[in-house]
Length: 369
Image (tube, rainbow, N blue to C red):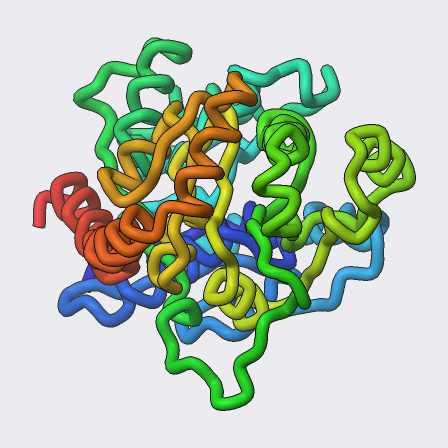
């Protein structure tokens, strides 16, 4: 029986999020694979995905109570993880994020690289941010590297000079909450028809240019509002900027909630707009497609690799290109019908089961089993 251990790193950084969900799916899937078992070595963590995950683990969930508590988490994990890792007797370690700690001697190690945002958009992070340094060290020490898209793998090779033979590409899955039965009391989360944007709104996510493109289209403004889901509440500076664009205060609104609420937002949106200037993979377009929501998105990085021919692509640096794509998807009914049908077909190519199977192939090659 070959044991694969997963480190504590991401589970002591995220309460919830895509990376920790990914590792919970992996650990759970590996534990169900004949001849293998998994063990998440997280002495202390505050991650909700791990708390509810059925993967075997060493450690306890302790509620986060601020920065001081987080420092205690990291101190406890540094002290206890080596002993718990030794007790698990793993054949292989898969690091869950970029650790400042050196790799354990003599233990085959895998690290997943999700994107190269810290390198390509370094100006959006403080100079003291250790992520890029730790990433480079972990990649150099790893016996093998998994990337979540061919685009990310190419960026890693180009920016860190990693040989392609050291890299495998395994695509992510997405939450099945977006394909569950629609509840009987289903209703739109916003009173007017709307375009939907999801996630935080700063920097490379390119929210501002998308809203400016919307504001520049009288047809879009008349027919739809612009709803943003998640991220922080609208700041005063954002509200002032929206007013300067000549938009009503209630035409660009932020809502938030659970994955089920997000699925509802996708179902009722006229379209999903994804204007990011870079993504290592990009799960939201798949979530939208699985919900029957047409997608208009950027033509850069991994995004075309994920959406295939099931979305209308635009140049994320060109407001006119974004506006044209939104108008086409917003008002062309035959195009919308084609996108919805193609989207349902596209999402079938991505699942957590497929992600686990591709990752297991990497583990088997490393362990010669």
